[in-house]
Length: 344
Ligand SMILES: Cc1cc2nc3c(=O)[nH]c(=O)nc-3n(C[C@H](O)[C@H](O)[C@H](O)COP(=O)(O)O)c2cc1C
Image (cartoon, rainbow, N blue to C red; front, top):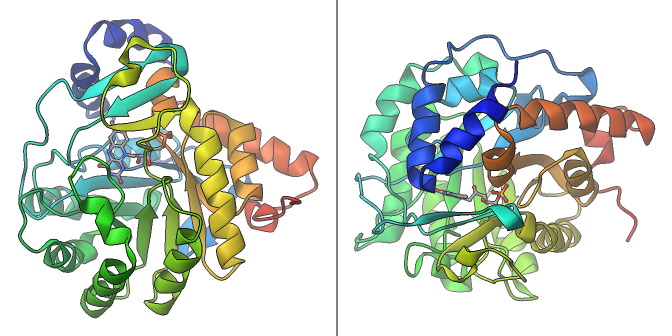
């Protein structure tokens, strides 16, 4: 039963951040149960992990790992919690989260508000990881004097309770963070992460706002340092044409207006990496056509967040069903066989 059409008008009467808190509070009541059965065509393996569906929940929804199990039960094939920093931090001043309903978009400048890694560790250690992979997205504290050491300590602290870790250097809301994507810093960061890591897969999450030569350079650095997959992409600081009154708010834009930009970034990363580096497509995915397009452009897995704000968590199952139909209509036996098959 889909309760979201009833819940949404109530939630949309609240400001966006309160609505988000109310949603998490409501989800905590969903008893974790076995995830819905998924079509066999959707089963896939990336970085040695098994996924019963390639449709994942992107980071930022469950920042403190409060409901990963529930989100898996509701039909997401995997869930990425975080971003979680070593120390708890309050994030930016409110308001810092805006719904742009006319644009099916969101702008956020949350600034890594979270309760810190030790608290999340406790909760994650109680999770049953058999329902699907739970990834932990890690970041650096805003006032950290040594951001690289925050990532190193994050990798050390969270490996034991994560199925994979994501190094997030692409949030626009922590000043200077995206500078870690620059040549010298990226090499230094990835070398330090490599030293600290265990056998758990490590993914790297990048911004969509990159220069022409960045994808090739980032792919090379990722391969050289043993990164297992690249997540393309985080929110954009650019502003494609928007209708909503909140269009001028500072922060990262996500949802439908990000789709073309994130798809373009996916194509660039695919052309830079061929099939050597698995890619995870995120940004503006709202239906099965978008998911299929991103997979054909090179994504082995996809994630979403903003579309769920407008459609509710049932979106994961709906996209999964639609994707199964598209795969069989186009003659693909599996997700893996469709990855990167787009004709240039
Ligand atoms: C409110 C909000 C908070 C987010 N917080 C994070 C975060 O903490 N870490 C992160 O890596 N990405 C974060 N993201 C980015 C999403 O994971 C995703 O990359 C982006 O929203 C694009 O996907 P979408 O268009 O499906 O929302 C956040 C997005 C939103 C809307």
